[in-house]
View 1 (spheres, one colour):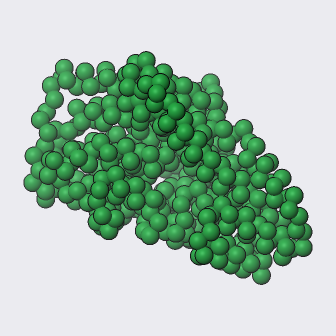
View 2: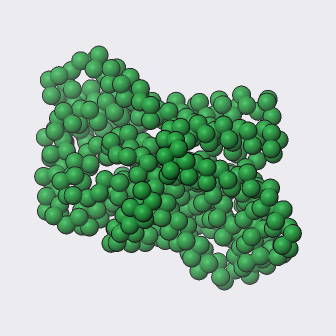
Length: 425
């Protein structure tokens, strides 16, 4: 019965248009009243305690790093580097988009920011070259969702805090799946674009490639610093976020000189606005998470999933389908914050590696970002590229299918995540 109260209250709040964070707080209050332990002070105390976590400091700094990267010219030079390397290949601009998405993912960890940057830079080039614009916009959206899977990832930080899982382990575990997502997008792009009669860009000379590499060098070194520092224990993920922000600020202002002092106010303001939304949502969700545990809702979920709990792969498939369904109506952060506290006890009973589960779970929520009707990255790309949303949805379908195929492969073969993870650790 308590499970029905929890779900009914949550979906009622969302159905009548209450913002997700306030819907979670409303759900928490109803659960407290239902269990006879209502106390307004508990709500405020749990929100403050939940947000007062050192690990969560990584979120504002990674968001700031992403803003500084875009304003300071790092994103633009990454795209120019990719164009110089593979722009002359048939369908090359699509491959450029995927390569740029992977490099940018290792800098910011934000799907919306990366999708917007890719669309702003590459869609005009692809439109001028004669590519199918809705399909190109769909590729930008699909490339953007790689960002929360390849470290550093804000989604992994949120999941690690909500589910009490090693964030360093999640970062290292996301590298191979993120690269597999990129390879699947390149394969899908080559298949769907082979009938287009689009002339490739001129082949760049060796000297031009060296110049493009030199210009992008400072940007390309950034992920090496971040991932290398985390891998070898030089700094924690939270400290890595500070390093990323300071590095992006230094390169943008003193190396590329595109970031001016007058631009800093807007950059910091945008990062602060996004941070406030995310952290308020985290704080509200952690109140609900605490009450979920007190009400013993995970035990009810475990009982419902008992028929498949002895088969880890079948259990993972059921959970992935559930998360994909929820992802059609909820954004990434709410999905993680609502479902991870409920599902983690089930995963523990089933004996599934929590880092492996976290990688698959976050990857699934990322794929949900390009499923209508919510589809955050679809709306971002539609607005930036000035392509109707309906056309972007049709354009993303081949790439959505490719990402789901990778997801199914990782469920069938967990070793693809666990073996590289053990080596990287």
